[in-house]
Length: 527
Image (cartoon, rainbow, N blue to C red):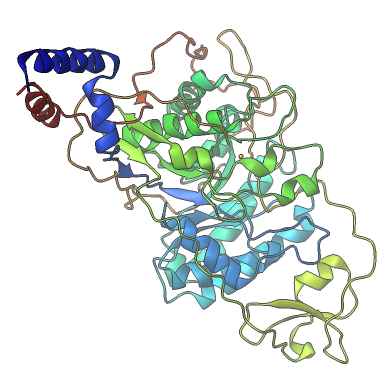
């Protein structure tokens, strides 16, 4: 090659290298490699519903529950239920969880008809604890109600009575004698009611900035502020704390609340993971593991309630979570991509009804007012409605029954406008209520080299010491006005400014960039 040719090639190479930097070629030769740690949560909320109240096929089979929990176990080993009786889920879920070596926080639902129905929840609890008494690690604890005070379904005094009844049931079973029992409600109810704080042995709240209409960039800060306020008060500051529900929907619209979108759901998850798991170490049951599509059938006016899941109802990981990768203040990058999201094959069992005489009290047909009796199968996993004489399955022909106002399968729907705590307010607003799918999540590359993989933080399994003796709260007067009690600080902080830089998270993709190969390539071209 002549000298002129070499000079010409060198000039061309310099031009190309300016137009297309070295890392452009490196990314073509060496695709981006993720070095993130797998996301691991303390727990997820779960229910066994697949249809609204009037649907005769509203309850999932045991096989589907196994399939659900197998997917959930990729993210956590713990789940939380809100009811024992709904769909007979208490015993079914405990059976599945025990088979998968998972743990369950049991819930006793308290609705507007609690005076007639709560005893049924207690009976289901008693039977389940009796059956699984030989498995001391299966049940984590028991909660009574879920925002029943906020919804005005029950008073603090009524819930304390129910909590003590649950405690008495638990004392009959050795595996549950040392497990916590508590009442679940929103943080402002705990803040404004000293009697509630004193009665429980675990402070157990639900907090949703989404329902407070907090902007997404301020949502995690507002969550932290609400909880820190509660934990500063007497009766709560010396007890274990569990966040029973928090989350953000990715679809639907309701006037006066937050903006539901895939990007916002991903951002809230990343912000809260860094806050709750990495920084605070608060035990949190995320709401929720799987979308509840049936919620929109239950309430056509509420299009967001069913979209809080990390997984679609078909158990596929949502696209924006597939792409999500974020770095917390500890310098560790986390991702869902580090897990195998293959959905296990659903194993189906052939129906084999028991003698109808054994099925008289089953709730499936009774709740639907169908003719005949409702029979579990011989192996206890498939439910069918059976005629009392023939044992033949009866398909309902009547019109569906009207839907109840509140369903225990997930937390109730929030009213459109919920006030937020502000600095000069003299009262504490009932702000948070519970909730219950695909744009790209904006990300930015990080230039720093990636370190070796770091294991995700493992949520603590050892709870602080818990006083299990029921507390005498007869001398404490309930603050029925919902105003702060005397122990409440004189001020409330306002939400963080949207201009505040959140150092908690750098939600960016991490690209491996190296100059060694570039140097070799350049040397070869210039030689």
